[in-house]
Image (cartoon, rainbow, N blue to C red; front, side):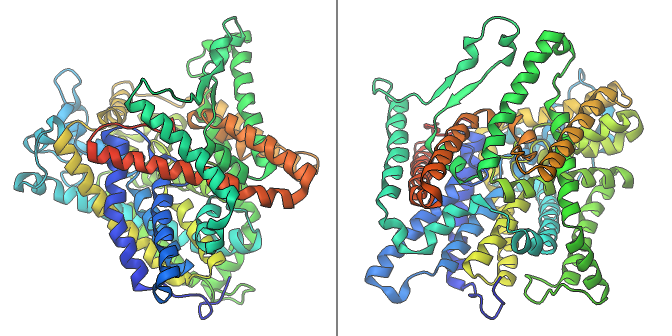
Length: 633
C-alpha cells in the first residue's frame, strides 16, 4: 500500500459528483426491488447500477480528456464516486433497510383478535423502535397517500432516526474491523478480490475502451437484453430464451428428487465466473451437484420425509462458522501483533500507513458496538441474548467478507438461517424469553438474508484504494459518510413509495412476526436435528480444509460448499461451469497470456448487461411499470 503522502487525495469534486449520484440510484434500488419486484441490484455482489453510474462518469471523462483535458477526472475521483454509490446502496438494499421497513409497522397494522399479537408481545415493543399509531399507518398500507403530512412525519421520525443511528453504528463497527484485518487480507495474503476488477479496469486507462473484444462482449450482453426487453414489452417480437430447467426431465424416482435445476445463459454471469479462480469455480459447480446428490440420496433412503431435509440452512450455517474460525486462525499472528500495538507493547506491525491507527480503530469498534448493544438493551432484550445474536451475526459477516475477497462470489444468499434461528435451535425459544424474542423479530430485517451487508463492500473499497493509490484515511470517512446519507435517503424513498403504492413487501414483516408468534405460542427446546446438520456442515468444511492444506492435488475449496446450496446460486451454477470450462481450455492451451487477452471480452459482457439492465430499470421508473429483468433472482 502506498504511504498516505504518496496516495492521491480525494477531491471535493469527486464527493460532489458522488452525492449528486446517490438520490437517483437509491430511488432506483427501492423502486425496482420493492415496488416493481424486479432486477434486485443489491442482491448481487457487484451492483449493476453502480457500474452503470461509473460507466456514465467514465464516458463523460473521455470527452473531457479529449476536449477539456484540464478538467478530466482522475482514477481516484471516479472510483470514489463508484464506492459512494455502492456503500449508499448496500445499506438501502433488499435485505437491510427495505426488509427492516417492512417490519416496523407490521405488528400494529396486522394485529387481529385471531392472531392474538396484542396480548402475546405488544407490551414488549417500545414506541421508539416501531410505529404504533394505526392512523398514521393507514396510508402506508393502503396507498394513494402522501408521506409529507405532519401526522405521518411525526409517527415515523423517531423510529427512523433511531434505526439510522443503529445502522450507522453497525456499519462503522464493520469498518473498524476492516481496518484491523486490511493489512493481512490485502497485503499479506494478497487475496484476489475478483469483484473489483471491472470498476478498476474501467477507470485505469482510456485504452480500456479501445479494445475491440471489450465492445464485442458489450454488444452481446447489451444486444441480448435489448432484444429480450423489447420482446417483454411487445410479445410478438421474437426473443432469445436464456432460461431453462432440466429438472423437469427427471420424472422417475429417485432422480425426480433433484427438483428445479435451472440452466441460465446470462452473459454477465459467465463473465463473473470467468473472473473467479479456477479451483473455486470448479468447486462451485461440483458442490452444486453434491447438494443434488443429497436430495437423491434422501429419496432413496426415505430421509427426505424428515421435515426440512437436507437442512441447507443449518449445513450452510455450520460451514460459515468453520470458514470464519479458519479465517481468524490463519490471521491470528496478525491479530496478535495488532493487540500488542493496541496495548502499546513493542510490535512488528506498524499502523502508520493504515486508514486509521489500530488503537483508534479498536476504540471505534467498542464505541459503535456499545451503541448497537445499548439500542437492543433499551428495547428490552437480555444482555446475553444481544451478545449471542451479534456474535453469530459477526461470524457470518466475517465469513461472507472472506468469501467475497477470496472467491468473488456473484451472490451471498443465506435465507432465514441467521442468528435468531440458530439461537432458538441451540437453546430453545422457551429459555430465551419473550422480550428478547420480540427483539429478534425487529432485528430480522437485516438478518433474514445476508446479501446486503456493507462489510464486504468496505473491504473491497480498501482494496481499490490499495490498487488505485487512493488516500485510504480519507476514503474511510467518505464511505461511512455515504452510508449515513444513503440511509437517510433510503428511509425517505421507501416511505414515499409506501404511502404512494401501499403494502410494500408485507410478506417480510409477516415472516418476522409469524416466527415470533410460533416461538411464543409453542415454546420449543433445543432442536437436536438442526444441530446435527449444523455439526455436519462444520465437519465437512473442516475436513475439506484439511484435505486442501494436506494434499496439493486436492482442488475442492470449502468456500463453495455453503454458497452452492442456496437458491440464488441455482441460477448461476451453469454460467460458472461454462466460465470454468472456457478458462481452463484457454489457460491449458494458451497460458496466462490467452486469459489476459480474452479478459476484456468477458468484462464487456458484464458491462453490456449492466448498462442495458440499468437503462431498462430507468425506463421503468419513468413509465411506472415493470420492465425486463436480465437477472432472475
